[in-house]
Length: 104
View (cartoon, rainbow, N blue to C red):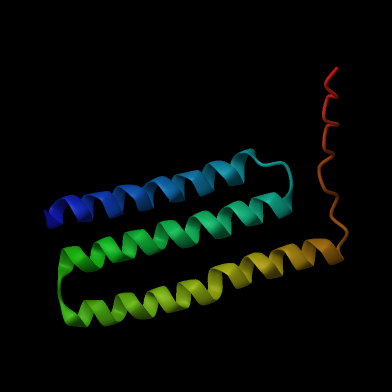
């Protein structure tokens, strides 16, 4: 049973990391890319670290995983915010939205 939970956590974590990478590749401007990377990578890495913690089952590793989670939640969103703020101050152009077609 625990192997199924570990497998689900690891597969979910890999899925969200891949979604973040695809978002980085496909989204049009720096603001959208920063948003995709920070949200997906924070969740994906959290799931991967929790899955690793359950797989290894040592208290020493649990403390290290918790420290890694705290640093991750402190640094990844902050880096995305700094990136977006720098782009805003440098007046990086945003993508142009296509007008929504009006219904007849």
